[in-house]
Amino acid sequence: MKLGFGFYRHQLDREHLRFARQCGATHAVVHMVDYFRGGGPHNPPGDQPLGSPDQGWGLAGIDRKPWMLEELLGIKELLHSEGLEWTAIENLDPAHWHDVLLAGPRRDEQLETISEMIRTMGKAGIPVLGYNFSLAGVTNRIKTQRARGGAVSVSMEGGNDNPIPQGMVWNMTYDPDAPGGDQPACSSEELWARLKVFLDKVLPVAEEAGVTLAAHPDDPPLEGLRGMPRLVYQPNLYDRLISTNPSRASGLEFCLGTLAEMTEGDIYETVEHYASQNRIAYIHFRNVRGKVPSYYEEFVDNGDIDMLRVIRILRRCDFQGVLIPDHTPQMSCAAPWHAGMAFAMGWMRAALQANP
Image 1 (cartoon, helix red, strand yellow):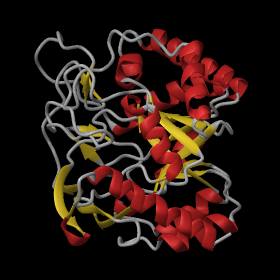
Image 2: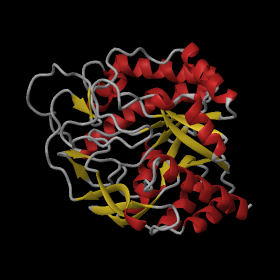
Image 3: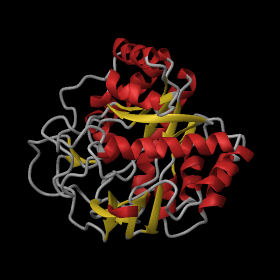
Image 4: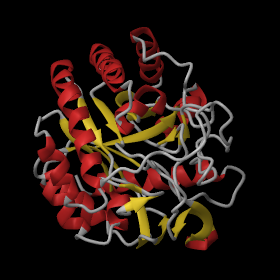
């Protein structure tokens, strides 16, 4: 197993990369979507963007072109220069695939765009694309001081039934000039059908490019949110996702915190089930207390999950991928985010060394 670090686009500078390397990271996962662009909420560097549940995180990258090879190679060289291997890109910008999610008029065009971006990833030698096939996206979170010692962390209390307005998907606005009203209702089976269209188109491209698509479970893992269905809100639904198109290029962006928030399943059996199938591309190694609709994020050593037990299961299944903390409670000091991430990285590094 390898220790990695997740970066938002605005963090791709030497200060953040050296911080990650000093924490022991050898690999990088990069969000090419930057939630702080286009009028979205600006939080301290690295802080998880929350925003208003109804207003979202700001504008999608409407004026951004698809990823260019020179752009990716430039980022890769910067990462390499600081001792980090680029293992994955995490998340597609809604501007690139809103009509794939919504079955809109530009779906075929956007599927071609995504296919070309995957080919570009292959040429740049970036092996994994993490995605979240979701209409409501990550929403409904609040910040509380429920983690150990009153540390600030993300929490959830209750659901959000407010409909998604026209021009928004995945909690970002892709069309600020959209007419009023809400996104049309969608059934669960229709959403699964949209996923199949996506996978059937892009998985053959991914196979040829040497790229694995890695699906994140729905967070929060509710059956429905903002009047829309969710796909992977229980652990066994990962099986349905894989069977939708069983290509070996279909993998999992395995978020331990989200899986533990689910109301069904045993987290340790879930880890073993998918690790033994060699379906896990990389892991969000984070801990929580509680389950939906009421949970909060805890320090990696202090939640409901026995993280050492998870590492032992992964070792037994010969998991060779990357673990990243994703996000973590913030600590009471002059650099809350840095301290929280350093604590998580130090614990993870020690746990890997103690369980060779």
